[in-house]
Length: 334
Image (cartoon, rainbow, N blue to C red; front, side, top):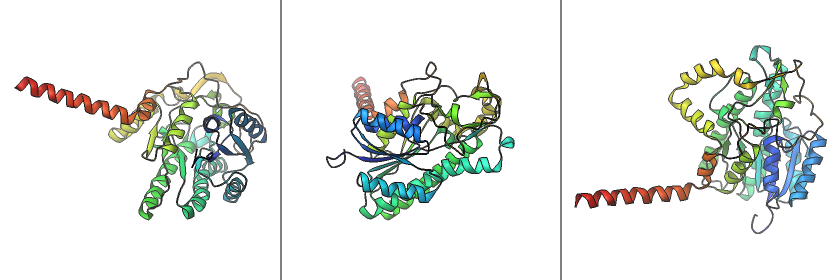
């Protein structure tokens, strides 16, 4: 709720995977949610689910690679729902395959949707939030914003780019003293439909890098980041945390490990006819929801996220333990 009124939230990539889970999480709060995505079938299904959960939906067919379309969607949102409180940049697409097999137009398109989609979303949101000096923009990132892996060069490049862009704009906002909150959420491998509907050059079906987590954890992290202004980043899953730490301490080790195991860990045994067209240039008109095909392998809980949500309590407990220990040592010395 914002000032006692339902929040107005915009989510890009709103109809599938992480975006769908984010929408459903905000809908449970009764939020008014603008749904930005290309596929009309999935937009209709997502809007219906929002209404069922108690929110209000505004489906807006939008290609986030087109700034004019994103800006028009932002205007339509404020006209229909009110001033935007939270904007979530989640839209993505990619091409699974070795870089040498990816064509320039494919790489460009994946970059325009995933990277420029976040840039254009941020621009459209800031154009409206800065004059009134309030609002939140959440960037949905990935462990791959810190560590590139094989078979995902378009996606890894885009997520690295988003992180650099985010750091730049955050510092500008701080310099200006703007009351705009802009956190970033870093995610692990997730059980989403992207492994079914993104373009692939591979002869086996791609899969997330294990361990795999459910998309609702990502949604909970985005919701936390959006509402706790002390948060700069929120991490989901132990693999995200140790990927970030490992890349800082020993990037050469990451190179070795990914060269050795990174390809095989992303391939199932299910054969597919390559290349698979996917949704790179046109949407796949279906409504798969938030989950992919890996429910049996996916974790529904994350200790890292659990700890993040209880950071203050855990810090207080750690302080008490430290104080008790110091007191015990002092008592032994007397």
